[in-house]
Image (cartoon, rainbow, N blue to C red; front, side, top):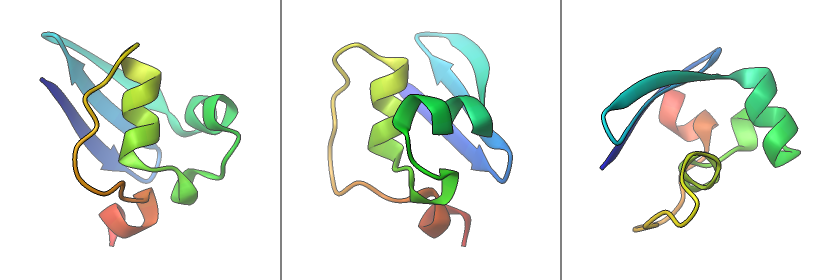
Length: 65
């Protein structure tokens, strides 16, 4: 299970028991999108090679509201 915690500067990730942070600039470089337009599915694709994507993707801008 992967846990994502979003804030204005990036995402705290817990993936397979390992906790790390993805900074906003790294996420923007990896996705070629502005941070508010990035979705939770985009983040999961960065973290895992074959993520289980369920439900509708949510943009960071919606998550932080």
